[in-house]
Image (cartoon, rainbow, N blue to C red):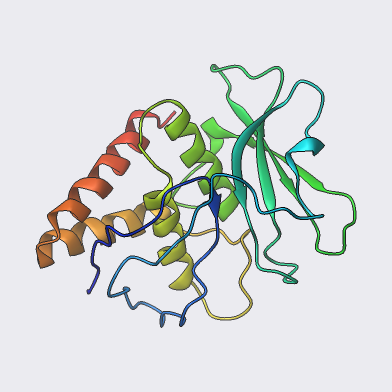
Length: 200
């Protein structure tokens, strides 16, 4: 398994999935994907933080989607006005490329199972961990999702596909140890520990 830590990743809040050469099924990447985040959402008619519901708080995090692909829509994340740490819920708004009405999903964070989670649930859970100060950035959890998603069954893929993010995290840890990328091992171990501490 060839997985390497890439320290040159730019951290921020907008996530664009890696669209480079696809990784063959069951093949680990030779380096962590060059994922890109941006502190401010890309201006778009499809998603804007002004569309939040009354009293909702924009979490300054968004998925950019894959333009024109109905299986990968742009998505913004919000905290509802009645947010309660006892039952934390984030709001995900997905924006169809044709400009039609947004699709609203409630993500009950205590119910997210990262052994069987889609990209929206994974990102929401990462935002939750970051908001609590459990992790420093969102890159590692999304890289793990992308790795698991790339190794999932062939065919049309959607950001709503459920994959095993925990196994992907363990893959990166194992590769880090086996190949001497100790920063990679430590980063993914810290992520796994944060997930386990918050496993409700």
